Amino acid sequence: MEKIKVGVLGATGSVGQRFIQLLENHPFFTVTHLAASEKSAGKTYGEVMKSRWKISSDIPAYAKDIVITLPKPTDTKGVQLVFSGLDSSIAGEVETEYAESGVIVISNSKNHRMDPHVPLMSAEVNSEHLEVLKSQKTSGKIITNSNCTIMGVTISLKPLHDKYGIESVMLFSMQAISGAGYPGVPTMDILGNVVPYISGEEDKAEIEPQKCLGTVENGQIKSASFAISAHCNRVPVFDGHTVCVSVKFKKKPSKEDILKTWKEFSGEPQKLDLPLAPKQPIVYREEADRPQPRLDLDTGRGMATVVGRLREDSILDWKWVVLSHNTIRGAAGAALLNAELLYKKGLISS
Ligand code: NAP
Image 1: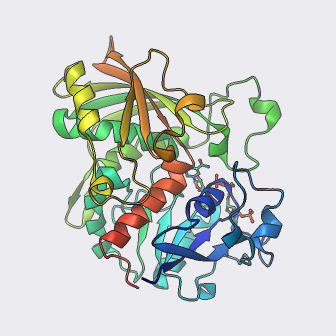
Image 2 (image 1 turned 30 degrees about the vertical axis):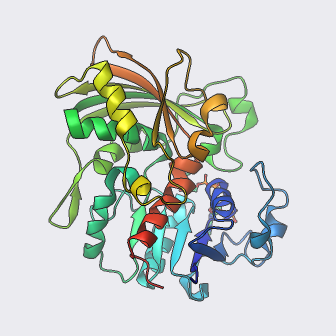
């Protein structure tokens, strides 16, 4: 069967590079369109990325000869879907232009995330939110991923919220430097240091999980009603966001209930056996000192959420630690899983 032609906007950035890596030999998609800023446009991907590729495998051969363009839907030639890893300063406008020209956009940027007609989707968590695509007025559609910090947190909350109801959440993040893009945080600021501030991050962490766990009402997404308080910190780790979470439930579960609920959790990606779906979306580590980015980041090829240290909280009910790969599960991997789900559901016409 002919593969669907796709593009990557922001292909030269941290998230863009992950897309290029994950799309190599993909069974459903073939990359024919790469876009970035004026700095990169007009040159081949191989030429631009010679000194900028930051992933520990070679630049895939398929991408090297593609000439990068500016992100304009007029240059797409049969592309039906684009993945966006564009800087948020331009992502909103550009993504709307692609959707208006009939292209499906799956975005990692914040711009459209809180629009009630746009799914903030994590394929195992809320694929039913795809229903609101019908209310988008453009011929192409926009789907977004959540912020990378709360991606794993929301996955750990999802099955518990369904069964026991969440009343409130406190979270403290320790976020990797690759989360700031490239070149990102200056070495002098982060080596041997912790920076207790990431611009805009706490605002997103305090509203996005509720939208992910919300319900569809009258063609719009209505956020769940619990409150979140977030502290976000940058730490000298290359990849992988670790988050300490404390939760108060409407009906307090036992430790065994929580562990069983996580173990049994799976969603549509597992049911449909999607190429990038982790076999087990939530992996619990019993060891007292896990999860750790260096040891656990590649679990489920970077697509699993690794949880550990479940114990009682002396103020709220329960607390635990969540680790997820920020550029894979928190960005490019989650977006590709969303696209695989759309494909399998027949929502991308060829
Ligand atoms: P990045 O490394 O700074 O990459 C940004 C990309 O946008 C580059 O390809 C850049 O192209 C392109 N770009 C910037 N200005 C442009 C313009 N005026 N016109 C066209 N292209 C332009 O950032 P990133 O970390 O990959 O993040 C990309 C997006 O994903 C952001 O919105 C970010 O918030 C979000 N996100 C990031 C992560 C993460 O872990 N890094 C996780 C989740 C979500 P040039 O190279 O040509 O300048």
